[in-house]
Amino acid sequence: MGSKTTILIMTVNLMLSWSNALAQEKAQVNWISFEQLHDSLKSNPKKVFIDFYADWCSPCLKMDEVAFKDPRVVNKLNTEFYAIKFNVESTDTIVFGQQNFTNPRANRRNPVHEIPLLLASRKDTPFSLPALVFMDSTFTAQARYFQYLDAEQLLEILEKTP
Image (tube, rainbow, N blue to C red; front, side, top):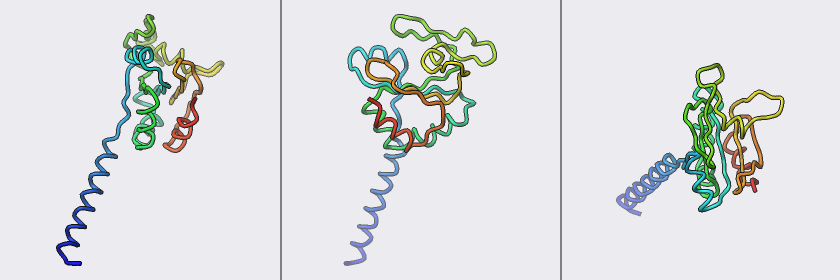
């Protein structure tokens, strides 16, 4: 094989590797809002994944960098789920199912919004983060996790969510 052919093959391989790396780097979860979810569930029922987080939550931030950037997780969430990322300290009024949900504790300590309190609370346990809720297409909770999950753990749960 001539040196020109070898250089051409190496250049093509390098370009393909670079292209694949860029594609993986750009893979992102298509996060939607609760308002978008309501309409989406009516027109096209799908499973729902909700990531409740706060800006100060280290495990939440680590999941953003590890689990939610893994191409397999991104693909699974984008194809089989409606994915919602919701800051528990939000002061927004959320309209969902013809109801308004607010954050009545917005100016107090631990200002957790009503939505995470409704969907990710545990009996006799204070609310904690990260809080991940897995729901079926009828918006019925199938599982809740209150811990850091790496890409492998999250993928395993996503695959077995009915």
